[in-house]
Length: 238
Image 1 (spheres, rainbow, N blue to C red):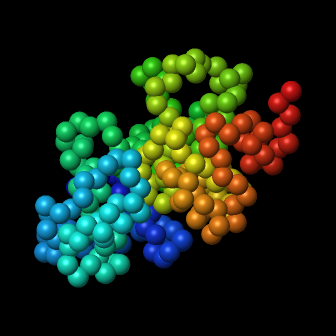
Image 2 (cartoon, one colour):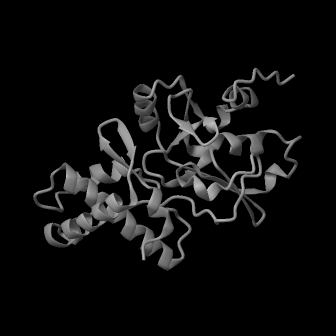
């Protein structure tokens, strides 16, 4: 049985555009990718998969490797998803801490900011781990409220062990502190206007251009005023 995280994965069906892929279509793509791998590829030439690599980076690495014959764009994309799936299973079996897939959200996890069940919105999930306790959020915006507003959410920020968000295009869990965020786009999350996360600035730039984004911010540039403005509130930090 395939892991739960593949149900909500995204596929970029055209350049600069991302569409939600139904589960049945994803399973079909996964099967196609496996056939490409088995019958058209030289396994010894397949490039290694680093957890930090984006989907586009792996796709390009596979293309340049020359490991597979008759590799048109459709086969290449299917193969890339299959390779990511294989890598995630291998890492899971080895007990690796690196993430190759989305954040695994418990079904009963509620966002501590808005109270919504996070499991219902897997593609928007974010997570903060604090001394063995995990908090899940239905979007980066709520996660940043939990992180920024220490008066409303009192806890020791120095005890944070991990902050994760998901790359919008690949749904891979990434370090929130190293991610790039598009603000003011025409793509909305469960709680409306959102901070849309990406593993690299190039992907963020492409998304910003394609979806009328206003600006791109690093994690440290996101402040209370930015977060509250997403809710239409003019926040005065003084």
